[in-house]
View 1 (cartoon, rainbow, N blue to C red):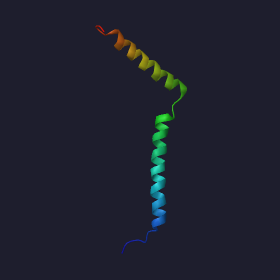
View 2 (tube, one colour; view 1 turned 135 degrees about the vertical axis):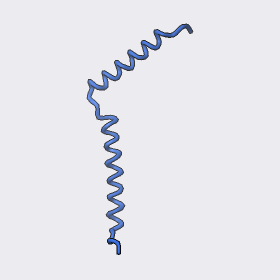
View 3 (cartoon, rainbow, N blue to C red; view 1 turned 180 degrees about the vertical axis):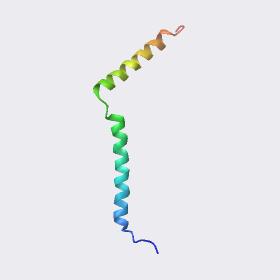
View 4 (cartoon, helix red, strand yellow; view 1 turned 90 degrees about the horizontal axis):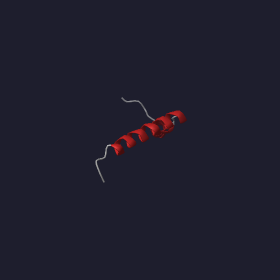
Length: 58
C-alpha cells in the first residue's frame, strides 16, 4: 500500500518549489554588478556602431 500524503503540505511544497525557481531566474536576470551591466552596454554600443558603419546607403 502507498504512503499517506498530506495534500495541503504537498501543495505548499510544490508552490515553494515554483517560487524558488522564479527567484533563481530573477537572480540570474537582475543580479548583476554595475561593472557587468556597463560592460554589456559598451559591447552593445560597439556592435551597433560597427553595424551602422557598414551600411551601404540610406
